[in-house]
Amino acid sequence: MKKVILPLFALLLIGSAAHAGLKVVGKGDNMRLDPSGFPPAMKASYDIMKVKCIKCHNLERTIVALQTGVAPISGQPFDRNATKAYGVKMLRKPDSNMNKQEVKATVELMNWLLDEANK
Ligand code: HEC
Image (cartoon, rainbow, N blue to C red; front, side):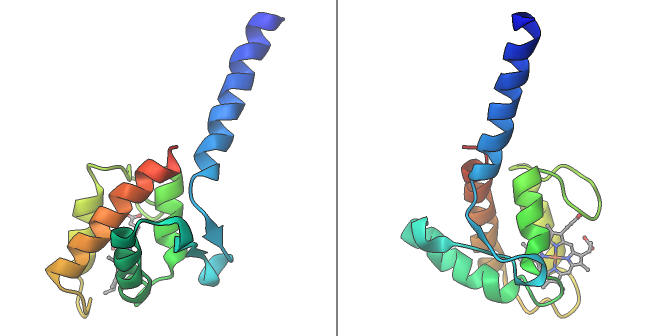
């Protein structure tokens, strides 16, 4: 019995730790991150994200991708190797109203948040 229960317990622990990583406030359209514990550079990037990345869809889409490691629309992996490509994809959309610097800042933020989400 012990042989089965211990690995299951370990999995549960890992699962809940992954979710404890990001401080999320609100639900659905109002879903936001709580930046109070962010280092200053990441706070500045979050100020860009919370304005620029909600023009076409809410922040829930980005937060879910960061929390689950899966891009919610395409079902593709959302990891450190993918964040830049998603940033560029968003930048290239018509009327994205972002510049490269802003996208770079949000990509760096997403990479940092991925690490935080996995802590
Ligand atoms: C000009 C409109 C627009 C802006 C601005 C925009 N997005 Fe998107 N986003 C979309 C559309 C449309 C989709 C639907 C799927 C696709 O085209 O990738 C999407 C999808 C996504 C997805 C899910 C991708 C998938 O494959 O599941 C993520 C994550 C995302 N956006 C994050 C961001 C971030 C982060 C920013 C800010 C840097 C941003 N978006 C800014 C239009 C936009």
